[in-house]
Image: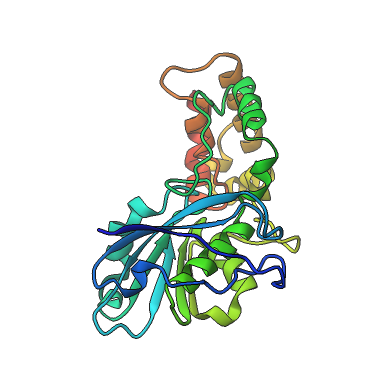
Length: 275
């Protein structure tokens, strides 16, 4: 493995938000085996003189490669530990394509934003985390990460890439494609996240309990259960907030919130009623 760090010199004439041409290629550009590296990028790509942060990536070249696949499996979570799974998913594609995986900024090895003691079910700890991160947190976004990936591509001297995104990785893929369409020759989205007209991920279904009523009404077994599906679910969440169940945490309940599939909706309501 090779671990190298490359700094960029930013030209004032460049448009804000556009990665500059590298002053020199990264050592990983000539690697023949897996190469782990980092580059330094601006905290705010719209302000070239802003604070520098480090972005980590792994480049795995293929023999006689005819292109490169950039990949992100989702989360959002560290991407680099997912490389074995990505290799398994892409399979023989990587016999002729290089693989590029980057930890998105703020995650994994890319200048992670850490809040020891933060607990999503303890609001005070989240508030403390927000205060510790401060205004810098506004720059740890898919928008900024898209510029980071373009900077890595240029630092490696790569031509057009393909992008494989899964789940939340489709958000990174769409952000990159929107800003750098000329850097892509193909894009594959698996379990795609929907992006609204405002450019943000559309996850409004999370709070749409009426969807749960809709799918439950289409199932005879679910429709025969007492009360409304949304009411049963709301009562369970309220009770777990007031009196946590040692066997069923509120977090576990939240992970079962998907309402769009009829069988899952029916089972969710039946499970809620039994608690």
